[in-house]
Length: 291
Image 1: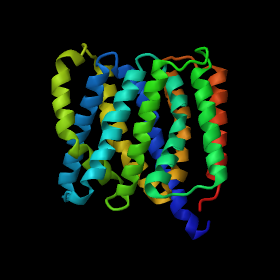
Image 2: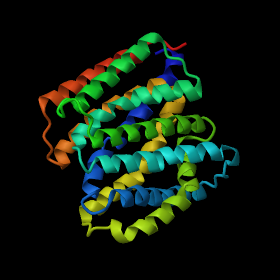
Image 3: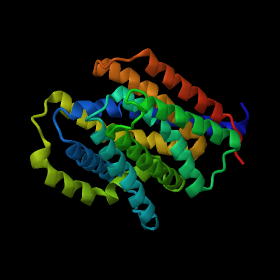
Image 4: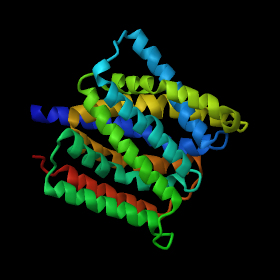
C-alpha cells in the first residue's frame, strides 16, 4: 500500500467504526420513544452526553479552545440539537428501516458542505454519483405515498442537513483539537441550553419508561451523541471530509439489520434493492478524483 494512501484508509476505518455506532440511533430512538417524548430525548441525551464529556475533559485536563467557540457552538446546534430533535420527531411516524435508507442522502449533503465551508473540490464524477444516489433515496422515500413527501421524510431531511453541517464543522475542528475533544467541547458549550431544556420538558416528557427505554436513552446519550463522534470526527479529519463521508452509506445497512432484529420491522426486498443501489453509486463516486 502506498504510504500516501494510508491516512485515507485509516480515516475510512475510523469513519466506519463511527457508522457502526450511529447505525443503531434510529432503532434506539424508536425504543426510547415508548417512554419519553421526542423533546426529552433530544435534550436529555445531550445533557447526559455533556456530563460524560466534561468528565473526560477534566480527567485529561484539556484547556478550553476559546478561539473555536463559534464553530463549536454551530456544530453543537447541528449535531446536539438539530439531528436528534428532527429525527426523534420523524421516528414517531415512519419505520426506522425506512429512515435508515432515507438518511442515505447524508454523504452528498456532507460533501456539499465540505465544498462550501472547507474548500474540498471533488471532480465531476463524484458529484454525478452523489446526485444519482440522492435521487435514488428520494424515490425510495416517496414511492409508497403517491409521490408525496410525508411529514416524517421532511423531518428526516432537516435532520440530515443539520447533521451534515455539524459533521463538517466538527471535522475542521478535529484537525486542531482531536475527534473526542471537538465533540466534547461542542457538548459543553451547549450544555446550559440542553440542561435547562431537559428540566423544562421533564414533567411532561417522561412516560413511565422501563429498563429498555432507559437503556435506549443511555445508548443515544453515550454512544450516538458522544462515542460515535470520537471515531467519526477523527475519520473525517484524517481521510478527507467528502471522501470519508461516503462510508456513511453503509449506515443504512446497519440500521436495517438492527431494526429488523430489535423492532421486528419488515425488511422487504425493495428496501434492500434501494439500499444496494445507493451504496453502489456512492462507492463509484468514492473512486472519483479530487482537485
